[in-house]
Picture 1 (cartoon, rainbow, N blue to C red):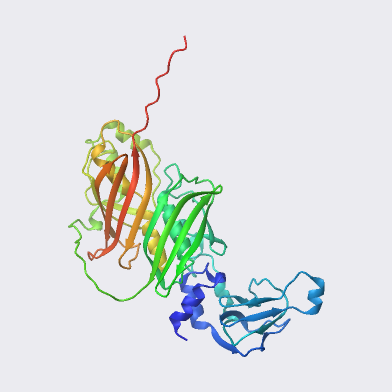
Picture 2 (picture 1 turned 135 degrees about the horizontal axis):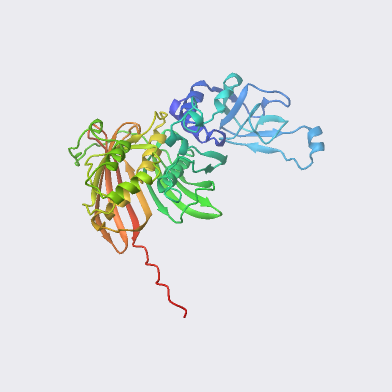
Amino acid sequence: MDPDEVIEFLSCVPLLQRLPGSSLKRIADIVIVKRYGKGEYVVRDGDIGEGIYFIWEGEAEVSVSDSVQAEEEDRPEFQLKRYDYFGHGSPTIFRQGDVIALTELTCLVLPHEHCNLLETKSIWSADKTVGTCSLVENILHLEPVEVNIFQGITLPDAPKFGKVFGGQLVGQALAAASKTVDCLKIVHSLHCYFLLVGDFNIPIIYQVHRVRDGNSFATRRVDALQKGNIIFTLFASFQKEEQGFEHQETTMPLVPAPEMLLSMEELRERRLTDPRLPRSYRNKVASKEFVPWPIEIRFCEPNSNTNQSKSPPSLRYWFRAKGKLSDDQALHRCVVAFASDLIFSSVSLNPHRRKGFRTASLSLDHSMWFHRSFRADDWLLFVIVSPVASKARGFVSGEMFNTKGELLVSLTQEALLRSPKPKPTPVSKL
């Protein structure tokens, strides 16, 4: 059998959707092909068989014994088809019975001695636990609830900004979609809408809708729910990698290397003593608790501007995930999706900042196109520009490059930009 076909098949087995891609590839190398004729016994009642059986082609029937049938009169006989599984150690819905081939039957069998591959602590790595992952990988970990349904939480150390961070919704929803697509297909575009503010004190349920599965492409829709309400929705398209035409017209701007720039922690310390900055601003920075982000950022043009200083509607900075990430390319795209929302839409506010400036800003929609593979724990350059703001909405577009100057990701976002309504002047009741 073609190895890629086996991996694609295993990725569609509901039992395996919680496994990292590396585990699926190991299982694909280990499984044994077993073929049975019509009417032939695959596993007899009470027999543990050879391992876990995954039905590749054909149909089988589970026939329970008369004694069991007498004890459980409501227990029906039933059929197993492609992508179904059974065997000793699997959480099958029957406890006893014969498995008989109804047609010519082909199964992939995972031997008993390798069934530990089905046990994993992380959806991204077979070799790590959630506790040993980097913070951003931990943030993007989801717990499978049932087929096509996952649960995510907001960790205490995750960025919040008074609500569930938009990038967390994008990254976790994309992670949920990725776990329902065979691991040879990687996201190439996503489009999402922020509908309601999320509550970081309660879990988020991600429900995946399998819109389409094709040979080269797959499409998913993911709804994020809290308290029964859809707070966010994402559409994502996945493609099996193939070779084609190549060109790149855009060029990476000339900027200092990230190693030559200050980290956000260093920049904060320098600002505390910068005499060009207002004393009130420095005191505010000093008194505010500093919570490091799971993404390291280095601005290409460090300056003495504050959030109340007018500046051009553009920004360039290097970023990368803190810590070493697992190798799954799906994870790296989820991390970049997470990081893309950290500062993106705020660039559209730059020309409007002034002393006493306050605003209420909320992301409305977000789109990304992934052009090439990358590692999110390597330095990436994010180039942002806001060509327009109008009708209380700010629009930004962005490009992400690797250190070689290759364009990796193109992005757009629109955000709601409003000045807070002035509080009404109290009226005397006398």
